[in-house]
Picture (tube, rainbow, N blue to C red):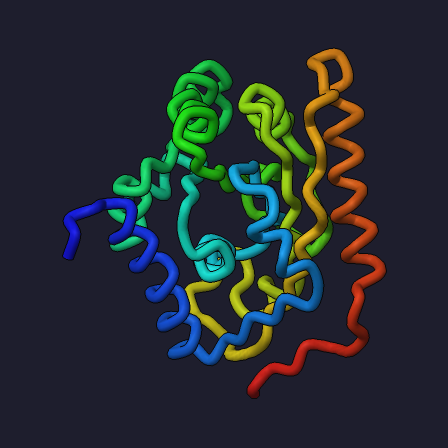
Length: 220
């Protein structure tokens, strides 16, 4: 109605993800830390990556006011590829460090100059197993350069409803914990490895000591 692209994207991402997940019979339960989705914006949101479903989960959680980083192949995904391009997502070619840095610079500028948050999976690609993969340094350099906090989004059970390589969704519940914002103001290039391990350790600890007991119930 008001011809604003950002408003269109926010509505499409938020409402579209709500509708799609509802039709698929997938519930999203933020069991702890819902307030951290809003308390530190702009920021760099990082999430563990198990499923093709993860970007849709993130859109449902964040509603709007963010852009992201995705592998180059995602540009060709019907529907979502076009939406990602409209949202200014940075498409990077895996294994090409120089191209990745150049592609991410506009996203960094949006965080610093426009107050738009950035969403990125520090594992870089979906895990081959439920075990958390190694974290790349890129998201940590971005948070440091943009001078914004980092907010970890820990996803549990996404692989149960749509595992890596699967083409079908299974009804069920995905649980989410959003951890408190991590202050990056004292980070330095010389200590970046320490910060990577610190944040990854938060994911490991949360997944191992989940705040709610009980197994995922799937409709069979």
